[in-house]
Image 1: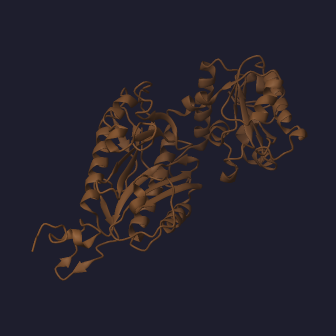
Image 2 (image 1 turned 135 degrees about the horizontal axis):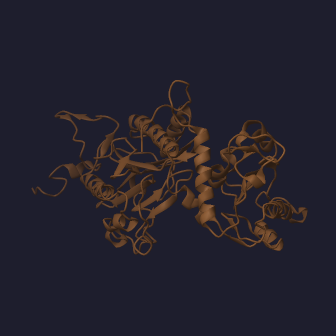
Image 3 (image 1 turned 60 degrees about the vertical axis):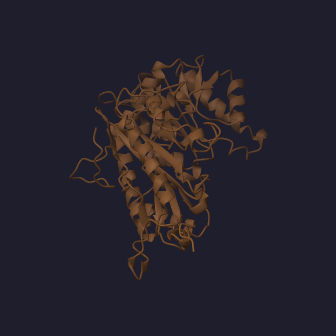
Length: 462
């Protein structure tokens, strides 16, 4: 299980990511889960599931539109109905969609080699869903989707078996049911297939993390008083796109008093001297994502912020030390504090502050680590899992907080951390900016100057 990185391009002189192997192994894992289930077929509208199944991608603009859909049955390889001319593009440049491993799916008149055969019908076809309701319902688009699906289910002999679907709109659900199709939850089947990563997936995830390492390097050099949160978002996005990112999903830039409670959204706030600031960088490289927090102090750090960081780091290190095959999500959550210990009434109110989640073609996959569910429903860790662990602790002065996140790959004997920007102790960004008559100003100080003198703290009386 290698977490080595090579480069972001393919070359002829070194074996890097093998994309044919990536597609084949993902499809094999999905088919294995379908065979284990009681489903006859899987229908996907979710962008990540479609990519995992078909190896197709038409841009991040389509991610929230539910306009394209893909089907795999027990007796056929994937079929993708795609947006307009994208379907023709796939027939030209996605040759794997014109091939099949399945006898019932193959062209009986065409020659074939080994286990791969030309398909009787190409796996890329034009098709469109409802545009999230923008089409007039009377146009019958939903009914057309259902008719396409029913045709394939009947053709491959699974029309009387349940159809597992990940996410769908109500008109599509009703249209499928009107065709007599039994629609059930298929999301768990997809997520079980995606739970353990292949070697190529791990390489892509590690490469994505290395790009965020670089973004944090630029961010660390850029941070100083007077910078706005949204400026840091722009800097990080440019760095990632310049490095070859496919999609910058978000940069969570939080500073100063906004750190506690965590609002989960950046603003145009000006960063001030002594502010805490934490960031979460989420982007995609060839579909594979990151979720990667770091916390800085800008110019200097208050003693309370230093203590908060130490606490967040302690909980992180205790969790990572437990990661190995056979451990459970409950074991990890056991070393994390209860919601009440850091100021929340219950675990739902504190959700995702002490947290863990699988990372792959989406940022939240299996397994999930949370005191909300993990004690009652523990998941066992296995070699090849890739997940992120997140910790949070508010500072005692009520102003700031610390947020740390590490992504790990489970190995045969433990784990390897693939997020490598320094985080073992609180970093002060902005360089040594302030000098006094006595030399460099202490990096651990209150941003309220009077609190850095005995007189200002009321420790000296006249």
